Each structure stands twice: as structure tokens, then as C-alpha cells.
Image (cartoon, one colour):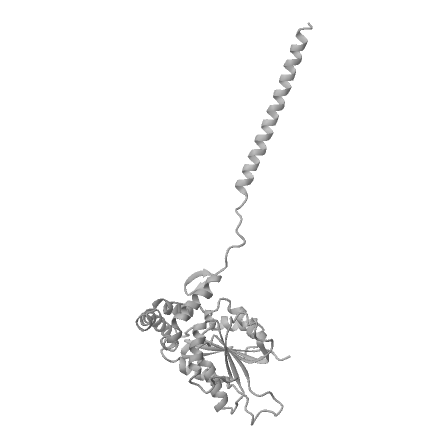
Length: 319
């Protein structure tokens, strides 16, 4: 009897130990299967630092690259800027610019202005590196409004375009005078321009190339004085379907080819055509101007040559 007792105890211990190990194995197996199930069902995380994208013509690129790629285009076409616009507008851009300036009537006529009023206008011309608009503004102020004090600051992000404008300015009466200044600047962040310091903000055939057009319009609002005017001349949407079909066929077929023949640069002209197609419609762009806080007169735009181009305006509300 005594010899059997230890054997019985041993059997019980082995039996209990085996049950414990079995329970532990089952528990571990269950936990492992739960972890595997959880790992399989948790959706993959989307990287938060994925770069934002935008369009460069019809190509989708990282936002950080667009400014660089647009800069390369305009460095390429700086010396043939007028030729480029002649091709893009069938030569009518010169008439559009003349109309744009006449309609804005820059300058403060000393014969009709109150004696206490400030002399001249302070005009900011954005993306106007070659001086096309600036020279017209100063000519109009001087000859039409007898204003020898209106001044224009030409701001452009592209140094090659600015160099072309400075070269042209030497042939004008405004070279080396305080009435004309050229500065390198990004329209989306005009830190060098004080708040409420500008009478007229103009941008002609430039805003469609900006990465963040809404940011540029907000900056325009910030720098303008109460009552100051935002004025934009830009390629737009043709409003006659038949004319639009003809115009697009010309744009996409002929302009890149002529760019290759005239400037040995097909790709830049291809981008410029595509950038027109990607630009917002007249209604969409008007709404962007309103959203920035501007008062929009009338319908908000004036179509030129059937909508090939359009003039948009916004007025900063007076306090």
C-alpha cells in the first residue's frame, strides 16, 4: 500500500500538469489567432506626408515642382515673349492690353483731383517681368491724365523675364526714375509689400501659371488699399462652340509646331496651350475673386474676342 501511494500521487501530478499545459497551449493558440486576425483586418495607413499635387499643363506634378517647371518655361521664352503672345492670341494680345489699360485709366489728373489728394497712383504689376503692362500704365498716366507721379512696381518670380523688362526699360523715358521699379517676388507671398499700400494691382497672362491662385488673390486683397482695384487679363474660355473648336485645333496643332520652328522649343509652347485649357472658367474665376473678399462689379468679367481672353475685376471694400 505504501509503495502505491507515491505512484498514485505521481500520476495525479502528471495528469494535472498535462491539463495545465494543454490549457496554456490552447490559450496561446487563441491569442495568436486573434493577433493574426487583427493584423489582417486593420486597414493600411495612408502616409500623412504624401506630397500634394497640382497640374502642370495636362501633367500631374508635385506642388513643389510646379514653380520650378514653370520657371524653366518662362526662362526659355523670355527673349521671345511678344512672339509667344502673338502666337497664343493670333496677334491680338497687343489690342487687348491697350484696352485693359485704357479701361483702368491709371493716374490721378492734377487738374481734376482735389488739392489735398495724394499725388499719383501706386501700381503693382504682378508677373509683368517684361514691362508690357507697366510701360502702358505709365504712358497712359503721363499722356492722358497729365500725371507725372504715378509709379509702377513690376514684380515677377522669374529673373530672366525681369532682365528682359529692365533691358526694354532702357529704351523708355522711365529708366532710372522712381516711377518704375523691378523686383523679384512670388505673387503668393508678397512680404515686401505693406498692407493697404497699393491703388491698383494688375496681372496679365500670368495668374494661370501660379501654383496657388487663391493665395495670390488673397495677397492682392491684403496689399490693396480700401477701394483699390484687382484687375486680371487672362486667356479664358471661348463661348461659341464652333469658334472654340477652331481655336483649339489651332492652339494644340499649330502653336507647339510654330514654337518648335520659331524658338526651337516645342515643349514650352505645348505647356502654355495646356495651361489655358486648365484655367478656370470665367464664372469659376469670378467666384474665386469674390471668395477672397472683393466686391465684383456687374457679372464680374468682360470677354474679349469671343472669350479667348477675359478681364476680371474686384474692388476691395472701403472701410
